[in-house]
Image 1: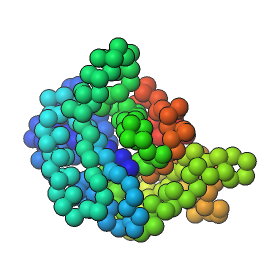
Image 2: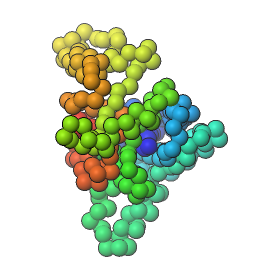
Image 3: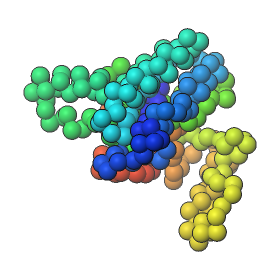
Length: 250
């Protein structure tokens, strides 16, 4: 299981030119949601998996502080966790870059980066690969586990043959705090003209809440995907896609 966690400058420092742009990175002077996510790993009954947290900074000059911050959160979560939680950050990526360069494989260095959604999603595939994992389970750090059977469900169809096709990837959904999956409850008037959230909710209702459980889908959530080794070792996320990398991967 790989959980990317995005961090930015302290609130008083704001955003500077050249900083990477993410939806909601956590300021360094706040606690964020990562600890809550890691503590909820106690919920799934199946504990036969490793967790790697990817610490992503919005700027080079805060990378060391981000690594230290996330390491502290992992240390705190590990006191009570029944699963092995590891950290992957810029210092670890630097070691991998050095190893590639020492073996004359410099051309691969640009493919492994800790900036941009697609690059970080590719690290979510690369890390399970070097760990020898059969599955990569991608989870976001603002989610919590509530289903005791989550791991069993995540592995239920992956790698199996359904009909005449092998299932190499599955995507799940997540619920809002009120137990619903709809996007935004209170909408501004302009949203009705844009229509994005209305169409998304209609699609969710048509795909998520209908039988059978396993079906082809026109959308996926990057924060709840399971990808088999036979797929993630041959198909990466497109590093040139700055946003919507999960839909592009589909």
